[in-house]
Every structure is written in structure tokens, then in C-alpha cells.
Amino acid sequence: MFDRSMSVFRSIRRTVAQRFFLAVALADFFARRAFLREIVAVYSGMHKHHDARRSGREVFYVRRHVHMLEKGISMIPRRDTFAAGYIEDLVAAVEACTAADLLDTVTCGWVADTLDAYFTATEASSSPEIRRARERYKQLDVGPRSRDFLGPVPVRDPAQVTGEGLPSYDALLSLAHARQSVRWFTPETVDRTLVDRAIALGMQAPSACNRLPYRFVVVDDRDTIRRIADIPGGTAGYAQNLVGLVVVVGDLSAYAHSRDRHLIYVDSSLASMGFLMAMQAQGLSTCCINWPDSAAADSRIAQILGLERYERTVMLIAYGRALPDAMVPGSGKRDLDSIRQFVGSTEGDPR
Ligand SMILES: Cc1cc2nc3c(=O)[nH]c(=O)nc-3n(C[C@H](O)[C@H](O)[C@H](O)COP(=O)(O)O)c2cc1C
Image (cartoon, rainbow, N blue to C red; front, side):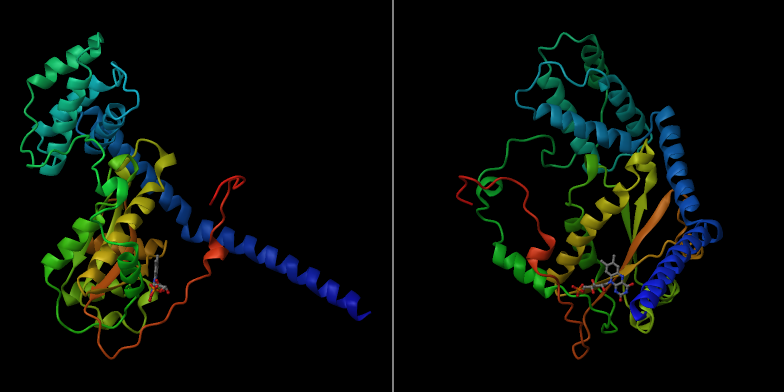
């Protein structure tokens, strides 16, 4: 009898839980229209992208296709003819972006060095498209280049092959252990040069097709910090003591297709990790702060920072010098075995 009533109770609880989930999902969809806002952001990004493509002035298109050229140049074996289908379009886009002064100096150097290498690599090609693109490129001055060669190079031996001369695993592990989310800071504002150094390291992170579809908005005046830090719920109790805040913003106009919409989150998070590590290496502490997917939060931050519709806040990062006497959560991680799964045969393999 007891067993039977327990089983009825469990079944009622399951039905209520399922219905509740359905009700919450529907409420979420209709009341907050979270997904709808995301769709609007994705499509306004694509609209901007295609619009800029029509006028030829689309920097992300240039970055993606120059990246594709680099892969073609590095191909084993390399073909005499490659990229013939888009090289004319690319040179035209570089020309338009240069005329509109849209390429930053590092991008200029990378674009020009790669195009130089491409036209050298395809000298033996009989493709009329490549020939026409080469002639057009010869007339083009891509603009100021940085001193280092930024196009494709042979693997840099020995560092890339053997790790020689690089920080040891143990040194990196100590840095990773030293980084902890700190929420209490001394009142001094942090020197902006240190923040720049950390961003410069963060942006070395891999990024899909080398687009770097994000920006780091650094806020270091107490009043604006307070206005922003109060928006997400995760800062309750400590927002008032923050002295520096980075708003990581993803740019959905980097993409021609909605299928790529998640890349802003992946790429900017990889860059953010580098930023956190570099801050730590300079004796500065950080704490990531969740950005909720909420219409009210988005509209408040868009108003404060003047964000475009196709720009999405990915997260906030508080930074500063750790208050010496404050406590920090230990934040035990997980056992390696619980998050790692090797797939593959180890038969006859000494591993
Ligand atoms: C995406 C993300 C969102 C986070 N959001 C918050 C937040 O809203 N408030 C907060 O105090 N900490 C936040 N944190 C910090 C986490 O609580 C912290 O990283 C975690 O507990 C592990 O601790 P550790 O960073 O010291 O290793 C966030 C971290 C990440 C990566």
C-alpha cells in the first residue's frame, strides 16, 4: 500500500515537474522573448555584413578570406592554382576597405604580406582570375605595414616543435592555480597600460577564421562601473567596491550565416581566458561576471555603452588589486577522470 502511494506520488511529481518546465519555457518565450531578441541580433548582424559586402567594405570578409589564402599557401602539397574563385573579390574588397581606411595597421600588414605570398605562390598558375587579381593588386597600396612579416611562415623551430625557450608546464600550472576569482579590491585604479598588455595577450587566442569578432570595453570610472555592475544579478554585495570592469562584446556582423552565431561566444571567451591569465601574471586579480540573457539588461547596457543591435554582451570581467585581507573561495574543481574521456584504441600503443 505504502509503495503504491509512493509511486503515485512520484508520478504526480514528475507530471507537475514536466508541466512546470513547459510552462516556464512558454513563459520565457512569450514574456521575455529571449530567443526572439537573439534572432533579431543575429539577423541584424547578417544584414550589416551583407550590406557591407555589397559595397565591398567588409573587414570580416577580408579577414576570413585572407585566412583562407594562408591555409592554401600552407597546404601540403601546395597547388599551383587555388583561391581562383574568390581572389578577385578579395582584392576588390581589400581595395574598398583600404580606400575607406577600415583596416587597422596590423591587419594591413597581414593582408599585404599574405597577398604578396599568394601571388608569388601562384606565379605558375594559368588562371585568368588570378592574373587579373594580380594586376589589380599591383596598383594597390594596402597602407602602413608593421615591421614584422605577418604572412604565412615556416613553423618556427624550435619553440613550436619542441617547446624550447617557452614557459614550462609547471610555470603555466602555477599561473593557472594562482588565478582565482577575486571579488574584493583595493580602491586604486589600475594603470591602463597593464590592462592593454593583458588584452594584447588575450587577443593572441585562436579565433574562427581569424576574425576576432569582439571588443573589450574597459570601464574604469567608478560611476559608470557602478551603473553597469548593478545590472547583472551576480554582483550583489560587492558591486560597490569594483574599480575596473571589462565588458566583453561580441560582434554578430562578422558572419554571413546564422550557423556561425555561436562563434562570438567561443572566440571572445578564449580571448578572455588569456586576458585573465595575463592580468594574474601582472599581479592583478579578476572575476568573470555572468551576463544574463535579459531584455532589460541588454537595453540598459546598450544605452550606457551605445552598443549596436548586432552587438551582444558576452560577460563582464571585474579587475583590480586583490584586497589583502579578503577571503577567496577555494572553488574546488573536478577530478580529471570525471571530465576526460579518451576515445581511440590503445592496443599495441605504449601510451
Ligand atoms: C561565465 C562566468 C560567469 C560567472 N559569473 C559570476 C557572477 O555572476 N558572479 C560572481 O561572483 N562570479 C561569477 N563567476 C565566477 C565563478 O563563480 C568562478 O569562476 C568559479 O566559482 C570558479 O572559481 P575560480 O574562478 O576562483 O576558479 C563567473 C565565472 C564565469 C566563467
